[in-house]
Image (cartoon, rainbow, N blue to C red; front, side, top):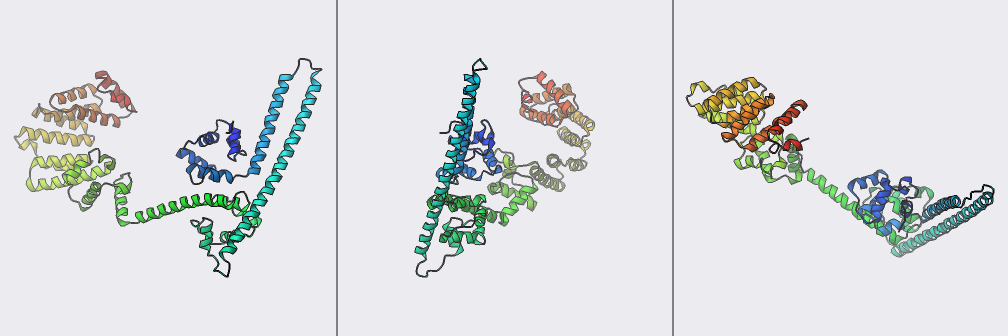
Length: 487
């Protein structure tokens, strides 16, 4: 087990990278995690790709085995790095020992220092010779393995195609080397390189240089004798399987996204700005899309579904506005046929939710509250018009309408909530809070009022937020604690 970050970097064949050798760096920490058998995060994997550490990335994601990774490393280079580290450690130890042994007398220290320097030179010389011997032995080992690989390929080729058998096709040779996923394997120059290796013919230096691409690095190792055929096929097979699986997934995705049904759903999601997986759209949302396109009123259960916990992930402001506009138009048409003012008020409610307050005002202009003796109806018309005026930023008119509506129906909470919202927006916090309290006393739900306050708070500017927050927390710190959680 490597003792230090430097040892670990050499162990993984990365001793030439400074950030891998230094403890506490991102790369050395990733190596430590990988060595401990811990999975790497997506960001860590992306970092390996960015640093072009392709073999290490393939090891981390399981595309190649540990044995295949370490078998493919250049052991001669690793031996050089270990020897260099040994020299560095020896120099450090010599320096530390000299510092410890340094006597107080400057006269007697000279022979000891000369002797230490002589020992150090001898040690460096011996280590350098050891490195050269290791390099030479490694070169011989690589040449011998390279010749064994070529000889085995020649024997296998002759056995397969003795007696005038049909020569293998490019596809068959690519499959033999587990490169069937690579289109380049079927055309020159790669197809010619594979044919030569298949027949046991040595590669030229130029051909070897073409195998430096990450996808062909294992083939280069096999060609240079760093690994034998069994190790190569084990590593190449896992890479090929992963590549073929990726190709299959891409083909399936392209086929799926080319389907007219998929394209229609994707287009609808783009129109209504719904951000979700198109493949996982629930059937009810598809039905809502169809109703919107046909211009037909949504079924009651479909409309209600949009406001449920199940439907919330698939809704958007644009979708809700389109649905409410469709509903508003339906009720407006129904009003024109029946002249029922309550139906007109329902249409106005949906126009406001569809962000079409001006259409609500146009419809309300057809109603004359002063002509009816029904105080409840008159109050409802005035309250609805006041809400539309609020949407159009005509708050003073809205306050006058809300006040008149409250006079007509003192026990109705709806004018009170309208006036509470208006005064809060105008930063008349005392008045706004008082009207909201009156609304609660008359039956308004506190949750609905708090939701309205949240909406007003979010739309306020920085100064308005600060003032509103301070006021409400002073009134009831427990009830309005949600203000402390909002950013």
